[in-house]
Amino acid sequence: MEQFLQQIINGLSLGSIYALIALGYTMVYGIIKLINFAHGDIYMIGAYVGFVCITYLSLGFVPALIIAMAVCALLGFIIEKIAYKPLRNATRIAALITAIGVSLFLEYSTMFVAKPDVRTYPAVLPDKSYTLFGGVRLSFKQICLFAVTIVLMILLQYIVRRTKMGKAMRAVSMDQDAAQLMGINVNSVISFTFAIGSALAGAAGILVGIYYNTINPLMGIIPGLKAFVAAVFGGIGIIPGALIGGFSIGIIETLVSGYGSSLYKDAVAFAILILILIVKPSGLLGKNTREKV
Amino acid sequence: MKNLLTPKNIKTVVGIVAIYGIIQLLISTNILSDYYQVTLAMICINIILAVGLNLITGFTGQFSLGHAGFMSIGAYTSALITINMTGEYSFYVGILGGAGLAAVVGFIIGMPTLRLKGDYLAIATLGMAEIIRIMMLNLDFTGGAAGLSGIPQYTNWLWLFVFSAGTVLVTRNFINSSHGRACISIREDEIASEAMGVNTTKYKVLAFVIGAFFAGIAGALYSSYFYFIKPDLFGFLKSIDILVIVVLGGMGSLTGSILAAILLAIISTYLQSFPELRMVIYSLLLVIIMIFRPKGLMGSKEFSLGGFPGNLSLPWKKSAKVKDEG
Image (cartoon, rainbow over all chains, first blue to last red; front, side, top):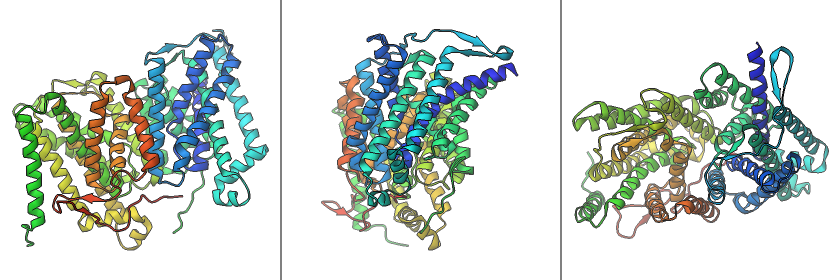
């Protein structure tokens, strides 16, 4: 039981990282129906920006987090303007290939600039841990991870539900043409969505650097894919779905590596994905849409 | 029986034999050095892979991101067979076994996942390829992350050419048959073709299985040419590589796939001199090509040897496009 609770806590920490990345995927997919493969790499860039801020500029955790989020938001904005906007009316597959191209570009230009070696993240947070009821340990890093995730989620909910821009985002994701006819500037809404999603990925990047201590230029691929699994699991395009999906995938993965074999933890995530897609393709919270002729 | 000796068919056969002869001559006279022969082998293997994927993605309109998974099944099966058997006939058994197993796996995976549409199918096939890769990493007879080495080298230019030309011819004839037209009708409009009485599930699975079969052949040739395989060779990046060839050449154009396979191999051979910048330039090219020519080099046009010289035939007047599900 004690070990089980410990696994759940570890799973929630991992899950909050997946959830932060999955939110960006789901928001972008909801609004322009594009699987933004470069999203996992924006998360990697976030980790590197945080690394530079902490190591070379000797900033604290919070300023580094804010700078990483800002840089990633800007990056997401630029990527959308340069690579995705010209293809908005092209076929889906052309847009997807472009996303893959952008993803490769981010990976290998980071590798070119920062060298392919694995880097150790500086210890910016104290390495303390607290023993809770029944011997379950909760580290200070995990507390920070949860705190940052929860604050960002609340902020996101506020933006999407309460602000004018959030209303515009919801309108565009429902019906782009109708939203445009109502006087919503669709282009700026899409740019804003990319910026927000990328900022969340950047936050996830710096958090994962602090939590796991190492970063490398290709670290974004597998978490990116898994976050996408999480987004599909919860129902793609639905913001609470990304949260539920992220936490579920995180917990399932830790339980599999804790009780089964850690070698198969990646395979399990993908097996769940295939199962979900076959049984309920619209995801846990998704609504079934009927195809009209 | 139809007369097979039409001028068009004769020209096609002569053309194929001529291509084989010229390159064989270049190899025998050592104008094509060993270094370029490796490029040549990669071109042939990529043509087989791309033509198979084009049948699934370009002609049937089913978006697969897991083609490397089938390739790895073919590569591992044939490697294990050729290592454990002696004699040259083990190579034939290996190729058949690899391709057959890849086709069987393609059938098992295709049956449930092909009900999905568009992006969902892409993600499901991606997940499937990842699962295959992780299994290859962890099963005890596949050698784990270190992979298998010491695979007997039977693949040579003759086999590479026979299989790539064979793949192209079989695929071309399939597409021009009534089965092929059924596949194309699924790409154009799945609901409409179902209403016209086309058994869409059957044809989608059929295209998927044929594509997987060819990928198995390509994997078997690969393992026997480079006598070393490991799971990382058949990861997500390899699937993307194949898809890039298909999209760059033009979805729904077999000759486009061939041209793109040759072009990309040449580009990557020249970029070999700048290893750090190779992938950066490659990815930039990809984005630029997609922005300025999203239909690929050939669109859905074909260039046929039979109609040579100077004939760009247009098999379907309507330009091909993947159905956009909004």
